[in-house]
Amino acid sequence: MTSAAIVTAIGIIIGALVAIYRLSRRIGDAIGVDKNGRTLSERLDRVEHQLWENGGSSLADRVNTIEQHTTSTAAKIDIIEKILTSQWWASPTEHPVEEVKTVRKTRAKKIN
Image (cartoon, rainbow, N blue to C red; front, side, top):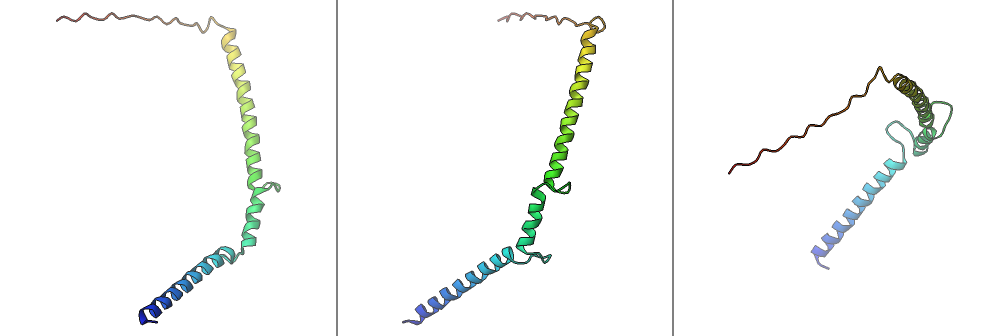
């Protein structure tokens, strides 16, 4: 074997080892302990805690509360709208409807 082939083979082996090392570090970072010392299992528990109702502190509980407030507000707005429209139509003399008159303009003739 020539020396160029040996150098190439050693370079390929070193490159493969570096790639394997980088890959193992990324996997270790993803699965291992984060900056705060929490494992993947602890982090997933925290996410799961937010997804399910648990008495007020989860994201699902907050969404349900917002939905209840929105429904209540919509019902109140409907009531107010019905009250206002019934008062509007109850006394038509106080709120006369004006007719809209359209004025047609004629085009001027071109003079050549």
